[in-house]
Amino acid sequence: PSLQRLDTIYWTVVVDDMKINGKSFSFNKSSVAAVPESKVAGALDTGTSLGLLPPHAVDTIYGAIPGAVFDPRAQWWVVPCTASTNLSFTFA
Image 1: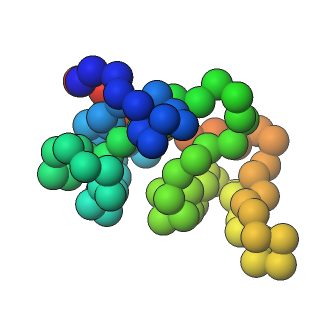
Image 2 (image 1 turned 180 degrees about the vertical axis):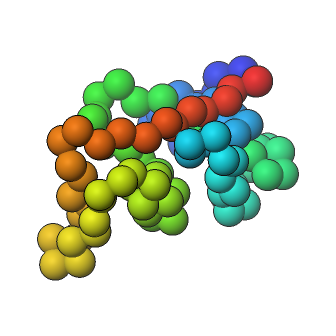
């Protein structure tokens, strides 16, 4: 897929697949026009260390990390320093 501007804020690409520990994750329908069915637009942003993902995707990613727990008071995930997971994105 070619790069395109999303509301002149971010460069974006079509994300064909996201896998967490080898299992495909199903995103909701994209709200960005011209993105094919079952795909989403991924913003390319080198100016932040945050993962700009829908809450369901974030919860699924962190929920797959052994020992990770969500702190409802702070509204963030606490992850053991030695924990890891395998996260991959496919851009065809």
